[in-house]
Structure formats: structure tokens, C-alpha cells
Image (cartoon, rainbow, N blue to C red; front, side, top):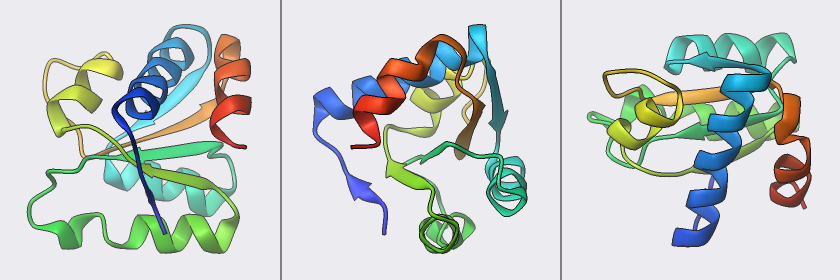
Length: 110
């Protein structure tokens, strides 16, 4: 299942998303994240703690476990959206190409 994170770990996940956004590739939104997991391109998935209704993202941890992708429940929709470079909140983000976030991902995937 998705890991509950400490504040420091949640900050590291947000940092990884921000770095991957500028130097790699990310997928924004629950649907795009789901597609990235199913296609085997997702390296890391983070979804918001305040998704309402929760059923929208309930499948993400299960799908990630099935595909061997690390999944984190981190931050609010607004925090995830800001890390992904959006003006609005987003329910989930998947890192598909890590770019300069390679070391941060290595640390998070331990």
C-alpha cells in the first residue's frame, strides 16, 4: 500500500516532483498517473491526502504494488499541484523520467 510519510519525506517527494518537472517528465492527474503505471513508465507515484471522494485514488496503491512502483500519499492537492507546476491542485503525479531527481528518487526508493 501507499506509505504514510513524515513531513521530511513528504518534502523530499515534493522536491523530487519539482526537479523531475524541470529536468525530466511527469504526468499530472489521477488518470495520467494511472496510464503511466499501467504502461510501466512510472518510476514514482504520489497522490494527495485530501482527495474527495477517496475512491478516485483508491486504485493507485494497489496498481503500484502490482507493477512494482513506489507509491506515496503525500501532501494536499494544492501542494501536489504546485510541485507539478500547476495553478490548480491535482490528485496525483507520476514521475516518468527522473532527470536530475535521480539521486532523490534513489533515496526515496530504498
